Length: 403
Image 1 (cartoon, rainbow, N blue to C red):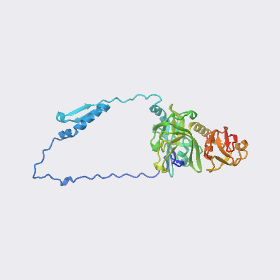
Image 2: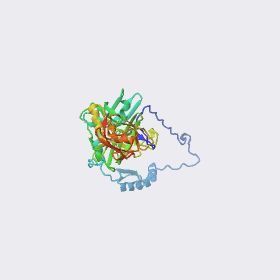
Image 3: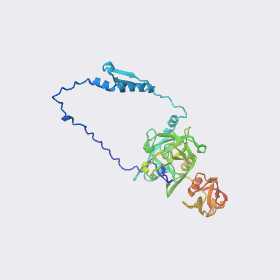
Image 4: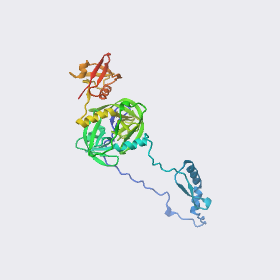
């Protein structure tokens, strides 16, 4: 999982680097409140008669017995209530409370319970371990022969000379190999040696609208098969994650479903149980990674993009990245994306873009920074046509190529 603080900077949040030994807790000793060995009865007075303990218990407890009985009747509480009562000379009496039988019936189709039961068997927990520590995350099975999608940042540090363990929902564990990964999209595909596995159904993220009900399934803080729910809060959120040398640019789905460290790579599903996104990042109001958690601002990579990347990785071992053939000034103070250089013979040059042009719109979307333009381009496929507009009012249609 990645997190973003109030300043908008995102950092990895896959419940990573959980190395170190747990420190044992010490029991706090319980000291007596009186020294019973030094107590002796007075000899110059008559000891008070010892009352029947059963009768004492009945007198002290009668009020609570009556109140509990009333509440039990009103709420339909469980079982039979036993109490000693002074009303019948300390004999054991019972108060019968009404309780409905447990409902073992199947939950209605479309309910959160039914959707979670259907999808959870295809959701896995991932533990990536190397010499420095470990990272935990989530993934989901896209093919019955053992292909699994997750976030790249979950397994990035364990790609070479490390161990990746996949735990299925039923508890079975498998060692996984990395088929391919791309930090540009924060997606990785793993493979385990198993067949006949349950698989998820992929939806279509182009049809998602704000307000749609969604469910997140994953392993937050290592708690496998955790289910939370919410709605789609916004579409096309520009999100940048990762380190300076390996930045991911995502046009994300925003959700208020609780997503926490360890949810990374898990599915975000719609009201029909279809995966519409991969949970990847959260926003937080703290800069302390150890204290980060859900504040209702989670971000998922749209499944249409994920499906293309995963298919390419399975087919070729790598993903293609669409490019327009320009270099952009990074974090320029000028509003828009400043073209710092144009690739000779590239699609941008062929379309007429020149060094120094400032792109302020792409496909009708206002562009305020270099990152926003990259996010628009990365959301497309090689061969797609993108129309950009510069601050001079000129428009250019650019056919994307790949690298």
